[in-house]
Image 1 (tube, rainbow, N blue to C red):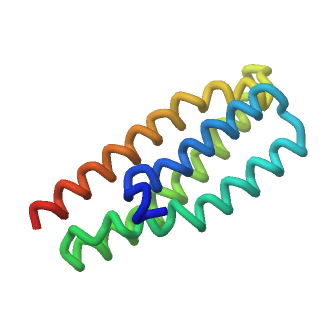
Image 2 (cartoon, one colour):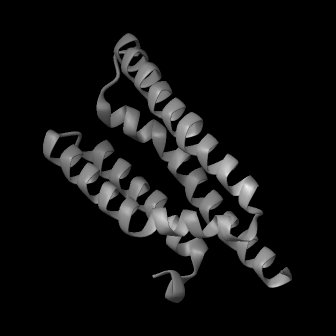
Length: 131
């Protein structure tokens, strides 16, 4: 996929999948849909997104790469997991909104993630061409 689609499109597969999954959850917030979305997102993440994201680091110095990877893997991902758990659960309960509405509210974040993945792929390609 990396050689056929390029890094940007391959990296954008996961946010596109998340967008579709959130759309499905907004329409039918059932346990079966939640399970299906989680399975598909994990498979896409390991098969496509992780290799594409690791490839983005090939144009930066090794020291910067390791610092950035550690920071992103520990701080960004874990903080995002914690924040989503703290914010969406209590806020949804306090506001009286269901999982479908929460999924609908998260759609813009998935769209931003998609655009960011495409932009990073484009920037990586430009940096690689300059090197």
